[in-house]
Length: 325
Image 1 (cartoon, one colour):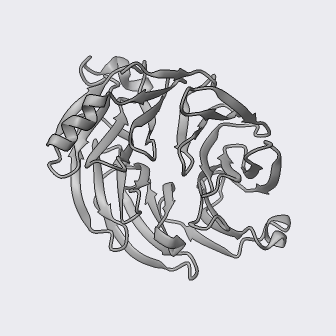
Image 2 (cartoon, rainbow, N blue to C red; image 1 turned 120 degrees about the vertical axis):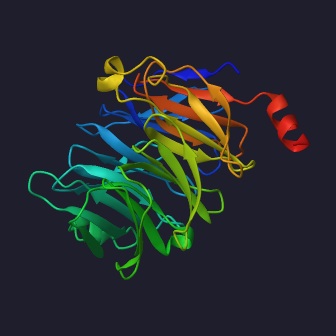
């Protein structure tokens, strides 16, 4: 399984994301660069230039016309995917940590950090109403005073969003009412990443408490747990098999103070039903910060603290083995 190595960032990767078809891969890092690549051969298509700080999050809408990015330069920006032109700029009081398009691509949400005396907010803008962006007036703003939001995704059909907090809590907020619908706390430490299944009925969380957990999107019922011996930074669900890939590792600053076994930086594969690990893929020289499955399930990508993104295509035996099993 020889990976395709993408070298387009000078700093550690913060998020990688495929578009809906999977022909494009968007990568952002702790530098101001937003890159887009052909996922089939790793060719770089272009860069979205404009940010002046680390870019924390990226998302593309369902027909890959627009790209949304959130950055530590206190801004959330909307881009034309094809031309790289900046279409909209929303200024915020603190860093934008998470962002995303809803099911139809008309509504965007993003969350800002609790810093510099400002509270943590989730803001919602309707792109069909241009005055909201121009006047920087979201149609809804949800304050989160207790604990900072560290990850957020849209639920099925754009009816609600699911957010993960620094203290390990999960919330579900209605996208129209803004009220908290469900609140659970299954993790003991910060939730680093949330990713949904292909049909959005389930989602998986990755946490600093060394576990990844599977939940029902609507009820937030806890279904499965995947345990490791190090913090999990990212987790993704295979669209075609009952497989989960986890990426993580000791934080870079702690690597020298721990035993050599714990600081390993492989991507780890677990079976969704049995919660058992069945494979590892080595390669990164630091913790893996983001993992994503290709929408067709035939490959996956990982982005690490080393600044590299690696695209791995599965061997044909992988598919035979699964269908026999």
